[in-house]
Image (tube, rainbow, N blue to C red):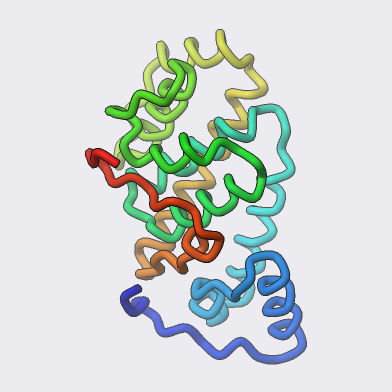
Amino acid sequence: MTATRIAPAEITGFKGMLIKRFAKKMLGQVPSSVGVYWHNQKVLTGMSTLGSKVKKWDASDEQLKSFAHMAVASAVGCSWCLDFNYFEAHNQGLDTVKAREVPRWRVSEVFTPLERDVMAYAEEMSRAEPAVTDEMVSGLVAQLGEAAVIELTAVIAFANFSTRANVALGIESDGFAEACQLKPLAQVGGSR
């Protein structure tokens, strides 16, 4: 991992102790991002709260949401988000064979047409000027229903919010996947 653009702050005080304890219990370590965001605890708390709420949504399939988030992370270049979401997919019992292939979903043969549609949608939403088409949305609505597409869209928007902040701040992978001995993620265009 290279140095972040803003050096992590020392996580102190009672609130800091609770955050470190919770992170170590849930993740086995305190993510480097916590130290960076510790400089503005309101932002850290707000992003964490929103992320927790996003995880509680249940109108869309968890695996599709995971692939969508990872497709955003791959498109934007957030190694932290790819690593963490791969780790999360493992911990939630999702398909890690497919999850590791998300960075090369266009050439990988493991995905269903629906999964490809979801990742294409995520990528189009992630462009500087989103290029989502009426056909993309209507196709997803036909396959998933309106409530699921609304949720999926919001998950992708949240993924863009969090991944772009991490990339801008230089926050990179913390090695979550390696810590649980998962196979490495495929590289974009790679042949793994």
